[in-house]
Length: 147
Image (cartoon, rainbow, N blue to C red; front, top):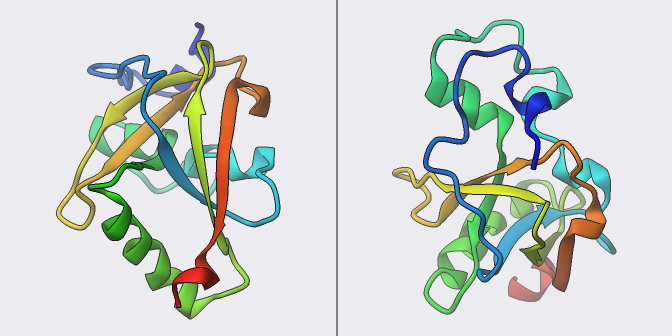
């Protein structure tokens, strides 16, 4: 896998401690009915994160270059759903579904990046060749089901 796009514009090694993970299920908030390329664009790629940030703060840079995902299993589901419902209640038409997926071999690497607000948070670093065919869509769940 190549990660030239990921490391463009930074000297940070965002892949330190990142792993290939083909076995676990992950969740990402999306707009239904199906995921699009736009659902897997990082804040850095959107361009709204590049101007004012300290590019020497590698934790921040790598967080902006990664795609936020959550581990999805019996232990994490309740917490992840509650997290997604918080923003869904404010804006119910924006990202109204949860995509449950698994990565295939060349999709990218995943790093466990929990924080005080999210015990099951991971950063997904897309390979240069990433496309939606490199993830297996397991299920799409409407957040409205949990209200």
